[in-house]
Image (tube, rainbow, N blue to C red; front, side, top):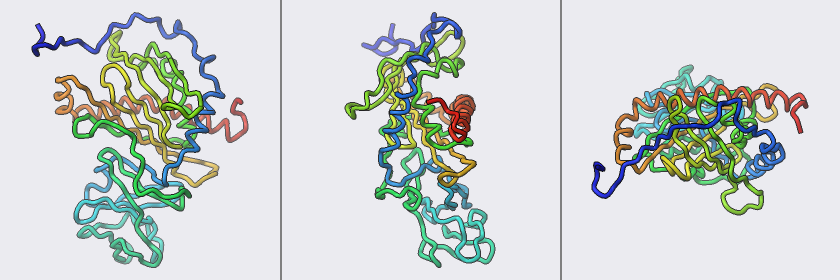
Length: 336
């Protein structure tokens, strides 16, 4: 008998009976380089209002000390004022160039540790604050000189479940490549069950974007997430690129419908650097209509490290490919 009158409980788990890794259907013919390149080109053409993701909301400078970031070769310092609001500015002291990330926050005000220059957010010898935004999951900073676009008042945050009713986790990694190499990897869903057999099985791309601008311009994928052994959770997911450095995977059907995995890529080095580095900030925002999901929310502090470890294993593989892609492109050896 169901534990709740009128509702029949069903498990999201399925027992996989598909072929082993070497016997699955090859996907190289479907993963057309021109199709991936076209999706990448459309993503690169979309505006973003000069906003860049710099980390997890609430965690940056949360211990009363400033912290530093690099975005497009621009050195930043971030701190929190007396009310706990995130602030950002140039990371170079306007007096004699000291690294402000090593300064101190006194009463919510940033103080340089070399000569005690107080930076309260007003203009000081050309120094000024940058706009920042925290969306409940991620923290963003707007750098108009780096982005070069018409600035937006706030970033275009992808549609996602409300953080209060979801389990969220943010993972960050750094690779020796440019943002486009990471985005290209995410716009190739065909590699999932080949490169990551420990995480995905029975992956099938059932719809690809046609480039006509209609619909959501996404890759629709049927895939099973591995849980343990032959136990899997089958879902239908959609991959879209709403901006030049963002790819969103949204669960469209199956367990956790509406949940998202957002991959944001921020260039750390200046454009055309001979040794580029990019930060991948990936946010998992998971929700479920199951009543038992309340238990998962209660266990969120325990689940977050598990989610981050899983993301870390995936990104070790994916960043290795992104780094190789850049190495081939930079020497003119990339196919196509």
